Each structure stands twice: as structure tokens, then as C-alpha cells.
Length: 357
Image (cartoon, rainbow, N blue to C red; front, side):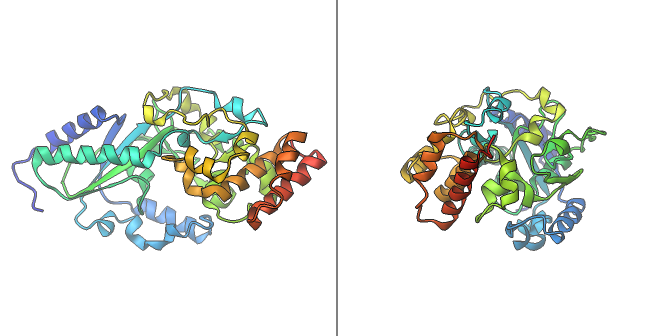
């Protein structure tokens, strides 16, 4: 499409940000497509094998770091932030209770991919209504997109030492989404980084996955182990996982900037099916039908029932020795899947030996 010369792009950019706020985004910024710094960082990370089994990080070549190769004609990227922190309970309370199941805060409500994508499509339609048809594509962690690098360029925050995006007034409890567009909109300036000498995230990581400032080895990260890894979790890492059954938020919880995060009132992100207060035994008792029913519309469903049982078995192995836990594990000793059987056997050995917390 050829851009209409009479469009006031400065005014349009201001309107886009106002429309974004009306649609529930806490911040909207605009970036250009030069991701050369992020490209160098990504390829160093890949060369060191720190992506583990996430081969999709290589699959699309330079399309991940060169937006115009992914979507031809892309000139600017509209980056949007939506906060998701639940109102309660305090995550530390769950982590301190070995019988409780910890699910990463982002996964307690509806699948954020769908929520943000709908809002971004609506934002695009408002732009169409204002200036006519234009080229765009909406992304929410669903394609080879460097969302954090783009958001940093768009002024939505800086990338912290834990590799998450940080905002002075919102911490890191937010989702990101993008509109790749062929509109020559004015770009926003990046913000200054404010991590300073702080290393709280490095020190708190249960498995030592943050191997150096701004460097994460995914192969040790609990989020990777519980979500991305398809096979057996390495035995040396299992005791370090505690009761974290889907993701890990420790590096965010300890970050000083998250003191300023505001709980979200977005209904779609409110906890569902009691996952914010569930016990390990309750979730381990779910049938596959229960799992599918209770994770409908949730990001959790992507790991499938077998990895769900695998993760829960590890957490039960880390819990205090309890006859009820041993009985539950015994009930799944003959699970047809070899991976689940292996983790159940490991957990039983821990429970009987009193090796849990």
C-alpha cells in the first residue's frame, strides 16, 4: 500500500496510544526495525546452546531479528504492554508451603495470547478507520518476534539482568504484543536502564539459570524445565524445583522494581479453577479429562497432561514425607507413559527416604 501523503503521522501516533489505553493496554510505544544489537546477543546465546530444545529459536533464521523479512514492507512496530499481576495471594506464601502447587502468575487466568491478540486486532481496525487500509500483522508470542528487544526500543522499559523487560512504575508483571506495520510513524526513544549494581535476580534463581547479568541458560531455568522440555527433567535439578509445577517467578518476585507493580483488574487474568491456591495432591489427582476441562482457554494446556503429571511428581517428591503423598504416587506407579513412571518412581524414593522438605 502507498501511504497517503496527507496523513499526520505524529497525530496518528498520539491517537494510537490513546486508543491502546482505551483497549486496556497500560502503555504503547513505537519502534523502528533495527534489531542488530539483539541479533548479536541472540546468536551468541544460540551458539552456546543455551536454548536447549527450543529449536524454533533457530528455525526462522534472520526473520526473528529482521522484521521486514518476516513481514515484507514493515517500517515500524507498535509495541503494547498489558499488566497481569493477580490481586492475591502473595506468591511467597505458596512457595513456603510444600503442599501447595506454584503456578507462574501469568498462567493463572485466560491464555494471554488470545486476550492481547483480540485487543491488537481491534487497535488495528481503529487505525484502518482513521487512515484507511494499511499493511499490518499482529503478534503475541506466536511467531519469530523479538518482543522484549522491540519493547525496549519502543520505550516500554529496559531489559534487566534476568532478561525480562522492566519498567520503573510497573516492574515486570506484564505481557507484550506487537503490530508490525508499514506506516512511517514517529518512533519513541528507549529509556535508561536502572538495574545498577543489583544482583538480586541472579542470587535468588533456584537453579542458577541466570549464569551472568543478562545471560540466562534456559537448560537450567525452571520455566523451561516445566514448560518447554518435552522429556525427562535432569535429576540434579529436580530437588531445586521445589513446588513449582508450571513456570517460576522468583527472579521477578525479588526484583526491587516490582514493588511498584499494580495488581491488574483485567478479569481475563484473574485466577481460574482455584489454581492460585491448589494443593499438589489435588492437581495430581486430576484425570486427563479434568486437566483438559480445567485448563480450557489457559496457557497451561500447551504442556499436555503427561508433562503436567511429570511436573507434579517432582513437586511431590520435594514435599515433606506424607503417607497421603506416597499413596497418591503409588496409584500412578503403573502409568502407561515411561516418562511419568520415571518421575513417579523418583518421587516415591524421595518420599520414603524423607528427602523432601
